[in-house]
Image (cartoon, rainbow, N blue to C red; front, side, top):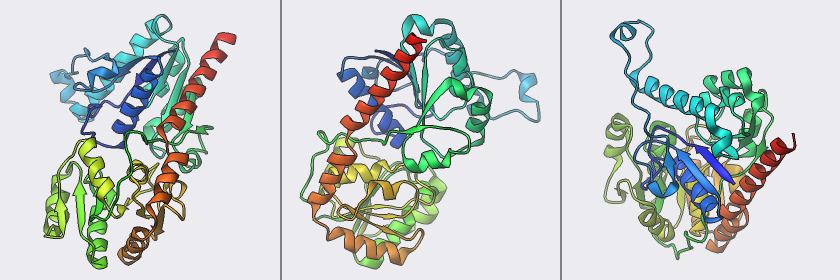
Length: 355
């Protein structure tokens, strides 16, 4: 198939990844290309050129002086992102049938949904986040023109009042991410922002008497300086923002991975990656994490409870590593995810041709 992927535009799709959405997009496109599909990606400048990146020649939008003086003017970053997606969708409305068989929208922007009915090819939109007003509004404008898929049953339920969708669970490359022997410190990785709850992981590790290694980009410098840096010590190390090969080595050596969202996690890619490395997970019971973990691969703790998380950490660290790896291979694999996206894209494409 000839597939156009509308990706996120805020961060480049390249290693080290800014977050799970960028990692998911890279893995999915790489696997689709490996299966012989022609994939063209729209994403932020600086994305991995091997993915087949296009539509990056849209100039940054600069408001006129008159528009800038408007008391209701939106921030420049918001306007640039809006302009990029608007330009892309107008372009696709003009020539999508000549270039593509289907469009896969994995962005979290409203315009690819609102304008999907203008395209002459089917559009599949992946819901990576809980309901937000911009996308809900787009669904009401022309949501029926897109086929929706959620990244977890939790996400499907969250959107059920406005969208009828299927579920394709995210996956991780269990061939690239091989299991390790463990035995090292506990591990935490992700964007270092308040909603990821890193301070809870540090406090729980200290309470359990277990050393902790931390990896990830510190996007919220104020939060890092006020809540995280004072907690660093000889037993709590910040390793920086790591590329995936180095990150995976730490996952293989870790005795347990902590996942501590302060919000309802739509999926939990860190947990799935940890299981692929054979490392059990201790996590707050939020969002889709109970879909990923079972009794052989991890332990769930009451949300925001440091004492419960410390207990879950010790219990998960005692689990046989084979259970975590088996869960990843049977439930969280990249091949399973790509099979399901491939089948869905073929289905909507054949349906459009038949119509």
